[in-house]
Length: 365
Image 1 (tube, rainbow, N blue to C red):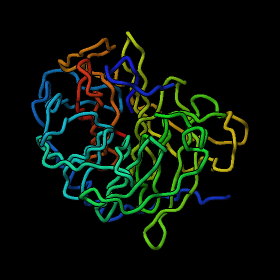
Image 2 (image 1 turned 30 degrees about the horizontal axis):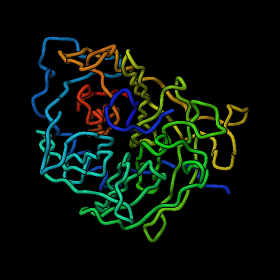
Image 3 (image 1 turned 135 degrees about the horizontal axis):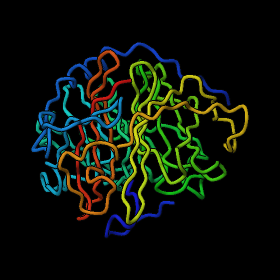
């Protein structure tokens, strides 16, 4: 998402039946292989600080930051601007897929972050996407959201459209539905077992209480398509915070990013551990107002990124911590016995006052 018009000089869009429940399953071998390959990820590019620096790297009792990298900031590859990143995923070979919200999908070297390939994406009419969420499926195809409608399409590795998933009509952008432009499907993740896909709305739809967001799921069919599944409700800590990304963990819980921006102050970015497994299916509820009988997704704060050590980072605009920027993408790059390696990336909006920055976190859950 292009967060606020104050962050970029270009024309900005404004911000402002029964279904089956999620049942966590054993992680597919393909998923396990990808995590295992990714677990070996090492320092990428000329990071400003690393884990060997004589400083405290703790952000909270559960989270620490190893390093950050500004290596790709304001660079180009094969004639394409490298930035505007909205999502990350670990590919089957351990490389990093990085999606930008102006229809480009990059393959990055897992160690150096050096771009190795870029594929241009489009809709069925050849028009650009507002591409925000990314999942690499077990066959290597790419499931990608666009905020425009919103939509989820399946693409081949070379960028051909293979499928398009159904979306509840009320999640469509007004006037077709109740969603607000630029506030729809931001996060996308595959739940354990590879049978359930989950997309997070960034902000509430009209008629729902501000701060209560809908997380929609789809279940895989026998012919490898997806049909609509259960839906769950998640409450952000404040109405100005949205959800730019979610990532599923092997036990069925989720890592959830909440993010906001205050002009003259800077970004707020918080990381939560959330559990949808006992939440109410809200797909048949017209308005979510915090009413009794609706169990929201439970969540626990892991860290507020503002509490992380800055590690020598600098900011190009006011920030409560110079390490912060418009963090939007997240991928779990390693998992072992409740310990995660998590990679974050900021969306610089191709703006001179923002930075494309990668963050290497260690998380205990």
